[in-house]
Length: 313
Ligand code: UDP
Ligand code: MG
Image (cartoon, rainbow, N blue to C red; front, side, top):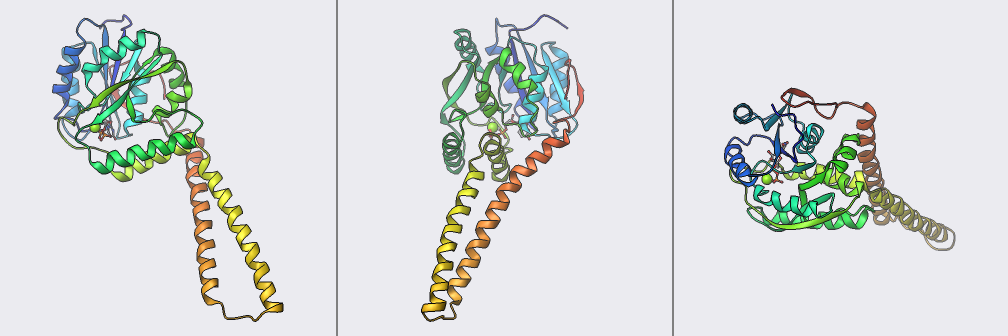
Protein backbone atom coordinates (compact mmCIF):
# COMPACT_ATOMS: atom_id res chain seq x y z
CA UNK A 1 0.00 0.00 0.00
CA UNK A 2 1.47 3.33 -0.96
CA UNK A 3 1.68 5.82 1.84
CA UNK A 4 2.51 8.79 -0.30
CA UNK A 5 0.01 11.57 -0.20
CA UNK A 6 -1.99 11.55 -3.43
CA UNK A 7 -2.93 14.68 -5.33
CA UNK A 8 -6.59 13.72 -5.41
CA UNK A 9 -8.95 11.83 -3.12
CA UNK A 10 -12.15 10.97 -4.90
CA UNK A 11 -15.08 10.26 -2.61
CA UNK A 12 -17.99 8.25 -3.99
CA UNK A 13 -21.04 7.32 -1.88
CA UNK A 14 -22.61 4.04 -2.87
CA UNK A 15 -26.08 2.87 -1.98
CA UNK A 16 -27.31 -0.08 -4.05
CA UNK A 17 -25.30 0.80 -7.15
CA UNK A 18 -24.30 -2.71 -8.27
CA UNK A 19 -25.28 -1.88 -11.83
CA UNK A 20 -23.04 1.21 -11.97
CA UNK A 21 -19.91 0.59 -9.94
CA UNK A 22 -17.82 -1.29 -12.48
CA UNK A 23 -18.61 0.94 -15.44
CA UNK A 24 -18.09 4.08 -13.39
CA UNK A 25 -14.81 2.78 -12.01
CA UNK A 26 -13.51 2.03 -15.50
CA UNK A 27 -14.44 5.52 -16.66
CA UNK A 28 -12.81 7.00 -13.57
CA UNK A 29 -9.52 5.14 -14.05
CA UNK A 30 -9.50 6.19 -17.69
CA UNK A 31 -10.11 9.85 -16.78
CA UNK A 32 -7.46 9.83 -14.04
CA UNK A 33 -4.60 8.61 -16.24
CA UNK A 34 -1.35 10.31 -15.34
CA UNK A 35 -2.71 11.74 -12.06
CA UNK A 36 -1.90 10.51 -8.57
CA UNK A 37 -5.13 9.71 -6.80
CA UNK A 38 -7.00 7.49 -4.39
CA UNK A 39 -10.68 6.71 -4.65
CA UNK A 40 -12.71 6.20 -1.49
CA UNK A 41 -15.96 4.33 -1.95
CA UNK A 42 -18.35 4.66 0.96
CA UNK A 43 -20.84 1.83 1.08
CA UNK A 44 -23.88 3.33 2.78
CA UNK A 45 -25.66 0.16 3.87
CA UNK A 46 -26.27 -1.26 0.39
CA UNK A 47 -28.45 -4.34 0.24
CA UNK A 48 -27.22 -5.52 -3.16
CA UNK A 49 -23.81 -6.72 -4.36
CA UNK A 50 -22.20 -3.27 -4.14
CA UNK A 51 -19.92 -4.13 -1.21
CA UNK A 52 -18.62 -7.31 -2.85
CA UNK A 53 -17.79 -5.32 -6.00
CA UNK A 54 -16.01 -2.65 -3.97
CA UNK A 55 -13.94 -5.26 -2.12
CA UNK A 56 -12.94 -6.77 -5.44
CA UNK A 57 -11.86 -3.40 -6.80
CA UNK A 58 -9.88 -2.60 -3.67
CA UNK A 59 -8.09 -5.93 -3.76
CA UNK A 60 -7.05 -5.42 -7.36
CA UNK A 61 -5.78 -1.86 -6.94
CA UNK A 62 -4.34 -0.32 -3.79
CA UNK A 63 -5.50 3.12 -4.81
CA UNK A 64 -9.05 1.92 -4.14
CA UNK A 65 -10.25 2.39 -0.57
CA UNK A 66 -13.58 1.50 0.91
CA UNK A 67 -15.55 2.36 4.02
CA UNK A 68 -18.45 0.11 4.88
CA UNK A 69 -21.15 1.63 7.10
CA UNK A 70 -23.02 -0.45 9.67
CA UNK A 71 -26.31 0.65 8.03
CA UNK A 72 -27.68 3.36 5.78
CA UNK A 73 -26.74 6.78 7.16
CA UNK A 74 -27.51 8.85 4.08
CA UNK A 75 -25.64 10.45 1.22
CA UNK A 76 -24.34 13.42 3.22
CA UNK A 77 -22.90 11.22 5.99
CA UNK A 78 -21.26 9.01 3.36
CA UNK A 79 -19.57 12.06 1.83
CA UNK A 80 -18.52 13.24 5.30
CA UNK A 81 -16.94 9.88 6.10
CA UNK A 82 -15.07 10.01 2.79
CA UNK A 83 -13.83 13.50 3.60
CA UNK A 84 -12.57 12.27 6.99
CA UNK A 85 -10.61 9.50 5.32
CA UNK A 86 -9.21 11.65 2.48
CA UNK A 87 -5.46 12.18 2.40
CA UNK A 88 -5.11 13.98 -0.91
CA UNK A 89 -4.21 17.61 -1.48
CA UNK A 90 -7.64 17.89 -3.07
CA UNK A 91 -10.85 15.99 -2.42
CA UNK A 92 -13.51 15.43 -5.07
CA UNK A 93 -17.11 14.55 -4.18
CA UNK A 94 -19.10 12.76 -6.84
CA UNK A 95 -22.10 10.45 -7.17
CA UNK A 96 -21.73 6.73 -7.83
CA UNK A 97 -24.40 6.48 -10.52
CA UNK A 98 -22.60 8.18 -13.40
CA UNK A 99 -24.65 11.38 -13.20
CA UNK A 100 -21.49 13.29 -12.34
CA UNK A 101 -19.06 12.55 -15.17
CA UNK A 102 -15.57 11.57 -13.93
CA UNK A 103 -14.23 13.02 -17.18
CA UNK A 104 -14.82 16.48 -15.69
CA UNK A 105 -12.41 15.92 -12.79
CA UNK A 106 -9.25 17.02 -14.66
CA UNK A 107 -11.00 20.27 -15.56
CA UNK A 108 -12.11 20.79 -11.97
CA UNK A 109 -8.53 20.18 -10.87
CA UNK A 110 -7.11 22.56 -13.42
CA UNK A 111 -9.48 25.31 -12.36
CA UNK A 112 -8.63 24.66 -8.69
CA UNK A 113 -4.93 24.90 -9.47
CA UNK A 114 -5.53 28.30 -11.01
CA UNK A 115 -6.08 29.43 -7.41
CA UNK A 116 -9.49 28.36 -6.14
CA UNK A 117 -9.95 26.31 -2.99
CA UNK A 118 -13.42 25.22 -4.10
CA UNK A 119 -14.61 24.55 -7.64
CA UNK A 120 -18.19 23.34 -7.75
CA UNK A 121 -19.69 21.81 -10.86
CA UNK A 122 -22.78 23.74 -11.85
CA UNK A 123 -25.50 22.03 -13.86
CA UNK A 124 -26.09 23.63 -17.20
CA UNK A 125 -28.59 20.93 -18.08
CA UNK A 126 -29.96 17.91 -16.25
CA UNK A 127 -30.79 14.81 -18.22
CA UNK A 128 -33.06 11.98 -17.15
CA UNK A 129 -34.71 13.78 -14.26
CA UNK A 130 -38.40 14.52 -14.06
CA UNK A 131 -39.76 17.96 -14.81
CA UNK A 132 -41.09 18.15 -11.24
CA UNK A 133 -37.70 17.34 -9.70
CA UNK A 134 -35.93 19.96 -11.81
CA UNK A 135 -38.60 22.55 -11.09
CA UNK A 136 -38.76 21.98 -7.33
CA UNK A 137 -34.96 21.93 -7.09
CA UNK A 138 -34.70 25.17 -9.00
CA UNK A 139 -37.30 26.97 -6.90
CA UNK A 140 -35.84 25.61 -3.68
CA UNK A 141 -32.31 26.84 -4.38
CA UNK A 142 -33.64 30.25 -5.28
CA UNK A 143 -35.67 30.44 -2.09
CA UNK A 144 -32.67 29.25 -0.07
CA UNK A 145 -30.39 31.87 -1.53
CA UNK A 146 -32.96 34.56 -0.75
CA UNK A 147 -33.38 33.61 2.90
CA UNK A 148 -29.79 32.88 3.91
CA UNK A 149 -26.86 35.17 4.41
CA UNK A 150 -24.53 32.50 3.11
CA UNK A 151 -24.14 32.49 -0.64
CA UNK A 152 -25.14 28.93 -1.46
CA UNK A 153 -24.71 28.52 -5.23
CA UNK A 154 -27.79 27.62 -7.26
CA UNK A 155 -28.02 24.59 -9.57
CA UNK A 156 -25.24 22.68 -7.86
CA UNK A 157 -25.14 19.40 -6.01
CA UNK A 158 -22.17 18.06 -4.13
CA UNK A 159 -20.07 17.36 -7.24
CA UNK A 160 -17.03 19.54 -6.63
CA UNK A 161 -13.36 19.69 -5.77
CA UNK A 162 -12.14 21.16 -2.50
CA UNK A 163 -8.64 21.86 -1.25
CA UNK A 164 -7.47 20.16 1.92
CA UNK A 165 -7.63 23.50 3.73
CA UNK A 166 -11.38 23.50 3.19
CA UNK A 167 -11.66 19.80 3.95
CA UNK A 168 -9.93 20.24 7.31
CA UNK A 169 -12.45 22.87 8.37
CA UNK A 170 -15.32 20.75 7.07
CA UNK A 171 -14.08 17.75 9.04
CA UNK A 172 -14.21 19.80 12.21
CA UNK A 173 -17.80 20.91 11.79
CA UNK A 174 -19.79 18.71 14.17
CA UNK A 175 -23.35 19.24 12.96
CA UNK A 176 -25.49 16.13 12.76
CA UNK A 177 -27.69 17.27 9.90
CA UNK A 178 -25.07 17.74 7.23
CA UNK A 179 -25.74 20.04 4.35
CA UNK A 180 -22.31 20.01 2.78
CA UNK A 181 -22.97 22.39 -0.09
CA UNK A 182 -24.15 24.96 2.49
CA UNK A 183 -21.30 24.23 4.90
CA UNK A 184 -18.70 24.63 2.17
CA UNK A 185 -20.25 27.92 1.06
CA UNK A 186 -20.19 29.04 4.68
CA UNK A 187 -16.50 28.13 5.07
CA UNK A 188 -15.51 30.61 2.38
CA UNK A 189 -12.09 30.77 0.65
CA UNK A 190 -11.99 31.38 -3.08
CA UNK A 191 -14.82 29.55 -4.77
CA UNK A 192 -15.88 29.34 -8.37
CA UNK A 193 -18.16 27.35 -10.67
CA UNK A 194 -17.51 25.13 -13.66
CA UNK A 195 -20.49 24.37 -15.86
CA UNK A 196 -21.34 20.86 -16.98
CA UNK A 197 -24.20 18.86 -18.40
CA UNK A 198 -25.62 16.49 -15.82
CA UNK A 199 -26.05 13.03 -17.27
CA UNK A 200 -28.67 10.43 -16.81
CA UNK A 201 -28.19 7.70 -14.22
CA UNK A 202 -26.42 4.76 -15.90
CA UNK A 203 -28.69 2.18 -14.25
CA UNK A 204 -31.01 1.82 -11.26
CA UNK A 205 -33.19 4.61 -9.98
CA UNK A 206 -32.88 7.61 -7.67
CA UNK A 207 -32.75 7.02 -3.91
CA UNK A 208 -34.24 10.39 -3.17
CA UNK A 209 -37.99 10.26 -2.83
CA UNK A 210 -39.83 13.57 -2.55
CA UNK A 211 -40.20 12.92 1.15
CA UNK A 212 -36.46 12.51 1.52
CA UNK A 213 -35.78 15.59 -0.60
CA UNK A 214 -38.12 17.61 1.60
CA UNK A 215 -36.23 16.50 4.70
CA UNK A 216 -32.94 17.42 3.05
CA UNK A 217 -34.38 20.79 2.01
CA UNK A 218 -35.44 21.45 5.61
CA UNK A 219 -31.89 20.61 6.74
CA UNK A 220 -30.63 23.21 4.29
CA UNK A 221 -33.05 25.87 5.46
CA UNK A 222 -32.81 25.24 9.20
CA UNK A 223 -29.03 24.90 9.04
CA UNK A 224 -28.49 28.20 7.31
CA UNK A 225 -31.45 30.45 7.98
CA UNK A 226 -33.69 31.60 10.81
CA UNK A 227 -36.09 33.13 8.32
CA UNK A 228 -38.96 30.68 9.08
CA UNK A 229 -38.76 31.68 12.75
CA UNK A 230 -39.00 35.31 11.71
CA UNK A 231 -42.01 34.53 9.53
CA UNK A 232 -43.67 32.91 12.52
CA UNK A 233 -42.97 35.98 14.67
CA UNK A 234 -44.12 38.35 11.96
CA UNK A 235 -47.34 36.50 11.33
CA UNK A 236 -47.88 36.48 15.09
CA UNK A 237 -47.64 40.29 15.08
CA UNK A 238 -49.91 40.70 12.08
CA UNK A 239 -52.54 38.34 13.46
CA UNK A 240 -52.40 40.00 16.90
CA UNK A 241 -52.86 43.38 15.25
CA UNK A 242 -55.89 42.20 13.34
CA UNK A 243 -57.27 40.48 16.45
CA UNK A 244 -56.86 43.67 18.47
CA UNK A 245 -58.88 45.63 15.92
CA UNK A 246 -61.55 42.97 15.89
CA UNK A 247 -61.75 43.19 19.69
CA UNK A 248 -62.29 46.96 19.47
CA UNK A 249 -64.89 46.38 16.81
CA UNK A 250 -66.79 43.81 18.89
CA UNK A 251 -66.72 46.03 21.97
CA UNK A 252 -68.05 48.88 19.89
CA UNK A 253 -70.81 46.65 18.54
CA UNK A 254 -71.71 45.44 22.03
CA UNK A 255 -72.12 48.90 23.51
CA UNK A 256 -73.20 51.02 20.58
CA UNK A 257 -74.42 48.66 17.89
CA UNK A 258 -76.40 45.54 17.86
CA UNK A 259 -74.79 42.18 18.68
CA UNK A 260 -75.59 39.40 16.32
CA UNK A 261 -74.84 35.69 16.69
CA UNK A 262 -71.72 36.14 14.50
CA UNK A 263 -71.09 32.48 14.00
CA UNK A 264 -69.20 32.87 10.72
CA UNK A 265 -66.69 35.44 11.93
CA UNK A 266 -66.09 33.46 15.09
CA UNK A 267 -65.58 30.27 13.17
CA UNK A 268 -63.17 31.84 10.73
CA UNK A 269 -61.09 33.58 13.36
CA UNK A 270 -60.77 30.46 15.51
CA UNK A 271 -59.63 28.41 12.53
CA UNK A 272 -57.27 31.10 11.37
CA UNK A 273 -55.68 31.62 14.76
CA UNK A 274 -55.42 27.88 15.30
CA UNK A 275 -53.70 27.48 11.93
CA UNK A 276 -51.20 30.24 12.57
CA UNK A 277 -50.39 28.87 16.01
CA UNK A 278 -49.82 25.38 14.70
CA UNK A 279 -47.58 26.74 11.97
CA UNK A 280 -45.51 28.62 14.54
CA UNK A 281 -45.24 25.58 16.79
CA UNK A 282 -44.36 23.38 13.82
CA UNK A 283 -41.52 25.69 12.80
CA UNK A 284 -40.22 25.77 16.38
CA UNK A 285 -40.42 21.98 16.40
CA UNK A 286 -38.29 21.68 13.26
CA UNK A 287 -35.51 23.69 14.87
CA UNK A 288 -35.89 22.15 18.30
CA UNK A 289 -35.72 18.62 16.89
CA UNK A 290 -32.43 19.44 15.25
CA UNK A 291 -31.08 21.09 18.40
CA UNK A 292 -31.96 17.97 20.33
CA UNK A 293 -30.22 15.75 17.79
CA UNK A 294 -27.09 17.84 18.11
CA UNK A 295 -27.18 17.81 21.91
CA UNK A 296 -27.19 14.03 21.91
CA UNK A 297 -23.75 14.05 20.28
CA UNK A 298 -24.20 10.66 18.68
CA UNK A 299 -21.75 9.75 15.95
CA UNK A 300 -23.08 10.71 12.53
CA UNK A 301 -22.21 7.30 11.15
CA UNK A 302 -20.70 4.01 12.25
CA UNK A 303 -18.04 2.16 10.28
CA UNK A 304 -18.30 -1.61 10.14
CA UNK A 305 -15.15 -2.18 8.14
CA UNK A 306 -12.68 -0.16 6.15
CA UNK A 307 -9.20 -0.19 4.66
CA UNK A 308 -8.64 3.53 5.30
CA UNK A 309 -7.06 5.13 8.31
CA UNK A 310 -10.26 6.42 9.71
CA UNK A 311 -9.76 9.10 12.30
CA UNK A 312 -12.85 9.84 14.31
CA UNK A 313 -16.63 10.23 14.43
N1 UDP B 1 -26.64 7.54 -1.86
C1 UDP B 1 -26.12 7.13 -0.63
N2 UDP B 1 -26.96 6.97 0.41
C2 UDP B 1 -28.30 7.21 0.32
C3 UDP B 1 -28.80 7.67 -0.92
C4 UDP B 1 -27.94 7.83 -1.97
O1 UDP B 1 -24.91 6.91 -0.50
O2 UDP B 1 -28.99 7.03 1.32
C5 UDP B 1 -25.72 7.71 -3.00
C6 UDP B 1 -26.15 7.03 -4.27
O3 UDP B 1 -25.67 5.70 -4.34
C7 UDP B 1 -25.52 7.91 -5.33
C8 UDP B 1 -25.56 9.29 -4.70
O4 UDP B 1 -25.68 9.07 -3.31
O5 UDP B 1 -24.17 7.57 -5.56
C9 UDP B 1 -26.69 10.13 -5.23
O6 UDP B 1 -27.91 9.46 -5.06
P1 UDP B 1 -29.05 9.48 -6.15
O7 UDP B 1 -28.47 9.26 -7.51
O8 UDP B 1 -30.11 8.52 -5.71
O9 UDP B 1 -29.60 10.96 -6.03
P2 UDP B 1 -30.08 11.92 -7.23
O10 UDP B 1 -28.98 11.94 -8.24
O11 UDP B 1 -31.32 11.32 -7.75
O12 UDP B 1 -30.28 13.24 -6.57
MG1 MG C 1 -28.23 10.29 -9.16
